[in-house]
Each structure stands twice: as C-alpha cells, then as structure tokens.
Amino acid sequence: MHRTNFARAETVWIFALVLMITGGCESEKPAVDQAAVEAGRANVEAMSEEHADDTSEPSPAAMIQPARPVVSQTMAYTEHKDELVYGYFSAPADMFEPLPAVIMIHEWWGLNDNIRAMADRLAGEGYIVFAVDLFHGSVAATPGEARVLMMEAIEDPEAAESNIRAAFRFVSETAGAPRIGSLGWCFGGGMSLKTAELFPEELDAAVIYYGQVTDDEKALRPIGAPILGLFGADDAGIKVESVEEFRAALERLRKNYTVHIYPGVGHAFANPTGANYSAAAAEDAWARTLEFLNLHLAINVPDDAG
Image (cartoon, rainbow, N blue to C red; front, side, top):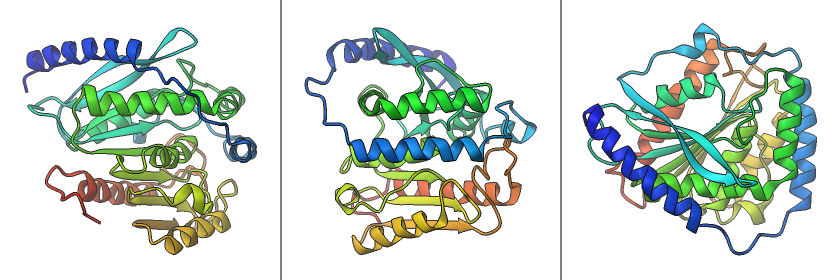
C-alpha cells in the first residue's frame, strides 16, 4: 500500500475507533483478584531493586532499523478518567491488506522511545504492531518514577485490563488483523500473560520476556494461546524457581509452550539501556521471538496449529 492509501485507511480506522471508544464500554466490572494484586506489589518492589541502576535513555542498540520501511502513528484507542489514551501504531509501509497483529506492552518505564523503536522493528518483519500505554501518557525518567507508575497500574487492575481489551478490539475490529499475539518485557511480560488470560480463545500467541508468571492452574487452564517465555537464570526479581513452577504447571495442563532460561544473565537482559543488557542473549531471544510469531501468526497457519 502506498503511503497515501495507508493514510486513507488510517482515517477509516480512526473513525471506527471513535465509535468503538464511545460505544464499547464494559457494563460490568470483574472482581479484583486481591492475591494477584499482592503478588504484583511484591513484583514492583523486586523490579525496583533490579532496575535501581538503570536508565531509560535510548542507546544505539535500541535503534536498530526495521528490515523494511514502516509507517507509524500515535493513535487514541481508549479512555481513562475521561481522558483519551494514545498508543503507537506501526505497520509495513507497503501493507496492502490486514496483517497479523502484535499487541506490544511496555516495561516499567512506560511507552517510551525504546518501545516505539521495537514496535517499528517488529513491524518491519511484516506485522501490524500496536504498542499500548498502560500508564496513560506518563513515562518514567528514573527508577523512582517507574516504581510509582507500575504500582499505580498494579493497584488498578481493572483499568489495565480494560486498556488491554480496548487494544485487542482495535487490532481485531479496526485494523482487521486475522491473527493476534501479545509481547511484553518486564512489567509488560506479565501483562502479556494476562492478555492470554483475558483472551483465552482469541489470542494466537503470547511472548513473555522476564515477566511475572504464575503456577495457578485455575488461571492458566483456560489459556489456548501458545506461550514463549524468555528468562534470565540470574534474575533476582523473577526467580528461576518461579519460572520452573510456571513451566511445571503448563506441562501438567498440557499447554503449548516453550520456556527458555538464559544462563549467566539477569533481569532485563534484552533492555539495551539496562545494566544487565546482554547482546548475545538479546539477539538470540529476538530470533526466537520472530520464529515463534511467524509460526503462530502467519496468515496461512491452520487454526489447530501447535
């Protein structure tokens, strides 16, 4: 699709989105899982320790150019406290029909330049990518600010889940994606798993980069999406023991999953601005991510693939 044609399609999408925002509100609120909230609070404290010496400033490693030209746009997709919330939409510049989509979920820093660069990079591989904003326009510049923003999101799970649901509606109904996956890092990794829980039959793939996981079989049992989990053996925040318990639960439930634990690396090994960044592990994880998404989101994948 030429850029002008893409702009026309974008206008149609935005018009449909306005109707969706104003008419797609949930009538009933789900019960809050207090145990999950408590676990989330503990995770915030663990992340505060893991990211204490990190920065949110982009580095050259974060700015790898997409494999092919992309077009991107900031778009409103939901509301929070009567204010529009904007996500980052990116797609191949030559797109001429709806493509598989990935809902991309930021780490605890928020929807910053690093996440937008990763959205463009993934879009360059042939996907519609919609990077959500679970912090409603706020972006952290320091670990202290990130802690506050992540805690606010954890304390209000209904808002976070409503946000994810709106993003799913956007890529499925407005963008017309034939298949949909989720991908997130750190805080976003845990939310990628939550997306699989929220859409147990509709989501086609979920990628979790060192996010909070669970061995709660009641929560995991309904999930139909294949799962790819990427973790660091030396992660003091997302401990290997919890990852192995997660893996064991998935195995007992006979889920379609792959869990890879990288030896000798810690939390946020794929974040090029972090103290734990490992180029080798990050590159391998990205290659695994692309292979996984291509396997499960390709348009010609049969519905029973796995």
